[in-house]
Length: 143
Image (tube, rainbow, N blue to C red):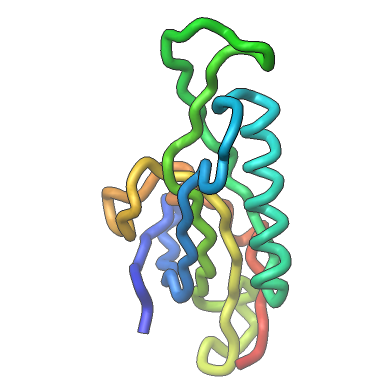
């Protein structure tokens, strides 16, 4: 059973089969959200996805930070990432049209950031997720 269905801009339908969500700044005891901290958060999310779901290629959707009007601190201006870090495993029909769609699927692990802890689908899905170049990123496997 899938958690959500998304129709990509290309017209391909993909299913979200696994989802891990966490607070972007979970455990941050000192400092403030800034470029160096955010770079560590983004790299950490990608590494976590690669370790947890090594059976499929991993794609990171670059986050869109916000810059609230605040004075810059010792590490530069305040830069805030969306509140929720997500790792999702998606599957679809095979990329290779020669493969039997009954016996094969394509899969891709995606890491991204979003503002709320909602499982998004349909038109609510972030355009960066809907624009995934599935045929270039996903990998076929036999069931």
